[in-house]
Amino acid sequence: VQLQASGGGLVQAGGSLRLSCAASGRTLRSFRMGWFRQAPGKEREFVAAISWSGTSTYYADSVKGRFTISRDNAKNTVYLQMSSLKPEDTAVYYCSGRVDFGSDYSYRLVHEYDYWGRGTLVTVSS
Image 1 (cartoon, helix red, strand yellow):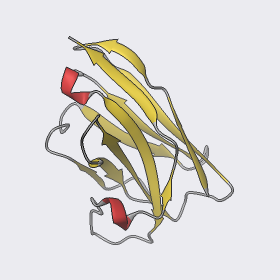
Image 2 (image 1 turned 135 degrees about the vertical axis):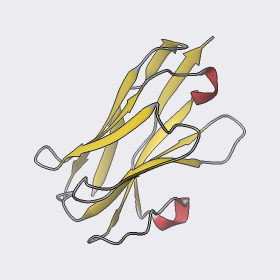
Image 3 (image 1 turned 30 degrees about the vertical axis):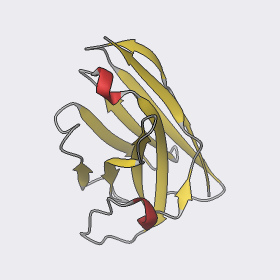
């Protein structure tokens, strides 16, 4: 499966952005999907994940209450709605996926995902 993230850009602190991750080559219906981000000079970190059905979502503490992950399996697309953005949210955002048929495990580690898209840059100005 090929993943393509889009929707990044420059936004002022307090603003909102919606990232999209479009998949091709395979249906995402059996995939756990995640969003990670990497700021300059820092390691890639977990942001959010969603189960194949969309019924379970998981968030990093730093974004809980501000970001919302969702998916539309009919469109083979995953979204990350980001609100109340802060300068510390500035990073390259990556979407990721792994085959998963409904485990309760949250999958928050980089090595737990098999598929990665090219990132999209989000810059939040103060």
